[in-house]
Every structure is written in structure tokens, then in C-alpha cells.
Amino acid sequence: MIEFHTPKLPKPLNLDLVQLGGGGSCPSQFYGKTHEGHDVYVRYRGGLLSVRIGRDPGNDAAQGSPILEVDIGPKFDGNISLTQFCRYFGVTIAGTVPEEKDVDAHLYSDLSGDTTFCRTNVERVTLQTSREILKACMSIFPSAILVKPVLGERYKLKELIKVPLENVDDDVWLIDGVSNVAEVRTSPTQYILPTEGQLQIFLKYDLWKSPEPRYTNGFREVASKELGRNLIEAGMRETPKDHALAYSTFKIDTEFASTNDRARKLLSLLGEVIKELLPVTPLDHVDLKTGRVVSKLNEPLDPVMKVWCRSGSDRWLSILRDGNESLWIGVRPSKVL
Image 1: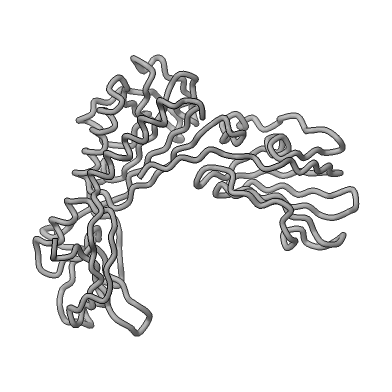
Image 2: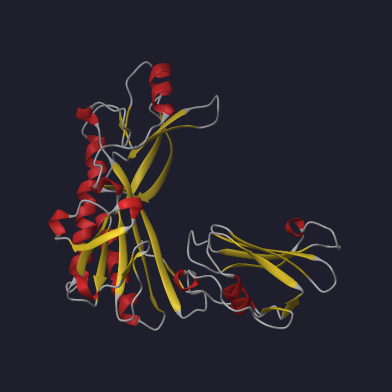
């Protein structure tokens, strides 16, 4: 349930270029030229970095074969400065590494290997179980505090407040290694700044703020019409209130020094607790027309969803179609347990 990623830099390219420039975010992109006149294209998005060189002068470098393609960063990461790229991957421009000019570079992910990233998405979590995960976080980090940014105009930080566990109603940071909010460094746009000696865990869950179902699925309506009965699907906002069940993704995002064995150990323990809260459960894929089980699989499942699914007629975890003109499939916990 908890995933760690520690970057491992490849061998340096030892590549000197005549020019290289660019920037941007998600992706960061740089365009340059070799001494032989070949175009160069660098792209970083989703943790994946690639360097491509045009086959011949004048050829589009983006269509060339990569001289480097490496899954180096954490999930969904897409910011790197020109200077960072050159330092990490052994590239120079006219014999030197350019000076850092990106004012936000200190906020970008450290890809040197000195930092370990933990960015985990726990899928299909109900509001009730999200509270249990939050309790587990505070139990594993008993000296930590929960804080929430209060925003003012243009989404800039107005203040940072401490939030009691029972009053969490929006995204929060769990911060270990501090005793009060005053010890947390902030900025107007980044809100909470990384600080040595602190473990800062961002906990995001949409339903704390908006506890109603939030998804839609046109398949449910079409399947109900074709099959002549009212199918109910978890998480769908068009569901009658008496049958509705909301769920969302619980996101955990933090980073720590790769040498910090304590942080890794405690976060791993949190992962084990989440596994207990979302036990692996046998699921049936059912032909909704005949009731025949066409396949089975095992997946982590929120027990609240399991109880909900079994407590009413035609309640399903999800409804899908196996091909454009094929079977309507409903997914639910197996009956034999």
C-alpha cells in the first residue's frame, strides 16, 4: 500500500552542447544543438526523463531515438531546471554547467538519490474508512500535529492552523518533529516548505470537504435500460440517496532523507495498517443478464463497500461493458466467504 521511490542516477552522458534552453512544467522541456548541428530534445514528465538527438542535421529531435530514457523521478513529477538536468545527467553547454536561474528550483524534486519519495494513492476509500486511516497516521506518529493552510485572495496562504483529529474537514499535513505551528516554515504559494528534521506528510481526501458521491458512469443508465431493471453502482452521484455510497482516493505524499530509516520504517508500518483496513477480497465479474460468474479476481476492498454491496438488491461495485456489443458486467464481492 505504501510505495517508496529512491532515484538512481544513470551513468553521466558526458555530453557537451553548443546550446540548450527551455523550461516549463509538466513537462519540463529543453531544446538544444550539438557541435555537429544535430537538434536535441529533452523532456521530463511523470518521473520519466528522455534525451533525444535528431538523426541528421535538420531532423526533428523529438522523433529521434533516445540516447537516454530513464524513469528517475517520483510519480507525477514533471519539474526540473536546466541546471539540475545538466548536473544530474552529465551535460554541459560550451564546456560548463549553467548557473541556476530558476527561482523555484529549490522546490523541485531532488533526483540525486539523497531523497526518498513516498507518493501513494489508496483507491476506493469510503469516508468512514478514511477516518480510520487518519487515526492510524496519528497513532504511528503520536507526537505529530495536523495542520491546514487557510487561504486568502488568489489562493495565497493567509495562515496555518492546527487541526484536531476529529475536526479534519479538508486536505491536511501531518508534521512530525515539531511541537507547534510556529515551527513550520511557510510561503504564500507553496504553503509548507520542506525543513530539515521534520517529516511532512500531505494527506489528501476529497470527501472530507465534500462527502457526497462524486463520480458518473453512463454505463449504469444504459445497462439498466437494456436489462429492464434498476442497477445501483457505488460512488455514483445520480444514485438515490437511500442507496448512495461515496468513495474517493486517499493520497499520501511525503519525502525524506534516504538515510532516514525511522521514516521508512514508520511509513511501512502505516502501509501494513492500511492493508488491514482494506483487506484483499475475492470479487466476481458477473454477467448481468444471466447472473453467471464469468471471472474472478482478488483486490483490496473497503469493508464498508462490501457491506453496502451485500445489503441491497442489484448493488454493484462497478458496472462495465466487455466490448461494444458484448456482455454487461457487474463487479461485486464473492458470495462464498
